[in-house]
Length: 634
Image (tube, rainbow, N blue to C red):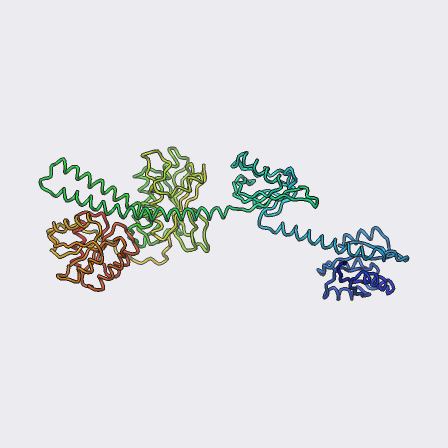
């Protein structure tokens, strides 16, 4: 059964209108009739029809002119022109104006026999045109790049997204082969497997690196599917390209962040345990040096042990900086002065040629910073830049300072910079640059491309940790053959607060220290023993326990200690909870915090809650004496 169509006949001849209506109604269609162009405009503006049968000769307006008016008014109902004049010139005009077909009504009325068929064909043609138009618009509107080729791979059609993605004009691609985008990243086996798959009438899907017209590489996801005709014959291929650049960037960021977090946790744990060991090693060596009957050769060995343990302690401080747990003492700092003084240091101490670019409007930029630590970051970046540029570099190293206000995230490596108001340091070199695989590992501890003995691979990781300790961001941008730019984003302080200059501590001899009763709470036996011996040399009375629970129980007895030295990192215990329990029960007993893992935020919070001092392992005997004396006399 044929579909019942809603048809609109515009015919001023009542006899013809009647005959046309009856012919179409016998075919099962619903027909509406009107006599004038004016009435037709009103009806078509308010009612939807499958087809308009429009007479060319109307009393108020020619059918061709009405057709043009419909187009101007945006009325899209398809039109079949019906006229008593077989004029080929008129037929051409009608079709150009948008009519689907042209039919001549004759006095013998033979046209009525074919009329239902011609109406059905016109409606089907219109639907096919609409479908084709929709498909073309869909292809052009798609965000993915789309390509249609013949069986030999010749490009027959591309959409606008592929033009933009590959940086080629449409005419530059039509008639070409997809090898136009070949990047030489993939081998012959890759493309052999690709062609074997699609020629077997199976879709191929995978990732492929293409080369844009400007020479840059682009990561894409490609799906190629075969197109079959109604008989099942393979006729064409359709390829859908999706730009994976942003996704790959996010994946690299996520992988880098996960890797940094995992390695940072490991580095922090190793540094904590190592600092406990160093505290014992350095302590026992210092005790040995105090023995009067120690032989000179042994004394020399002990001095070397102390020196080496201090070098090892510096290494653990770098690991802690990488683990984002650097010991920072931040205060409002002029960024221009810091950059200028560091440039002088780099020129005179490291013999590196460096230029400084600071806009006069940015000379007043201030950030809350530890100047010594940030200077270490700039020095580390300068050393890397010097090694990358090599001798006889074409351009000197550049230090830049600028103000940057981000209203949205800035895409960068190893992670995006969030929106905010920043002071930005940039260290730019014109060296060899880093390829993608080297850049991906640049922040890994101990990774280095230098020869053995030429570098530890800790420069960038330490810089990264220090910058994050400042709640800032370190980003890297590198192009092979064009150098590297490291950018440091630090939160800008709009209204700096005056900070008094820190007072350098004075190291006191043990005999100047008041004798006290001291309780040591530490799980490491060597640390407890060394600290006890140090304090007994100074004349103190010392008791030692291995856990916070034992310390709390000891404090219930008598006599009460004059000082508690509490390790913040006892396994399976919460150091902050131990402190708060002891401080709440004995608020008048000063507590000296001690740790091998500097957790800046936690330590600062406990100092604000009443802890008197923080002692970082490993420490010298004199440092312990000074900290104890300061705590008990505060």
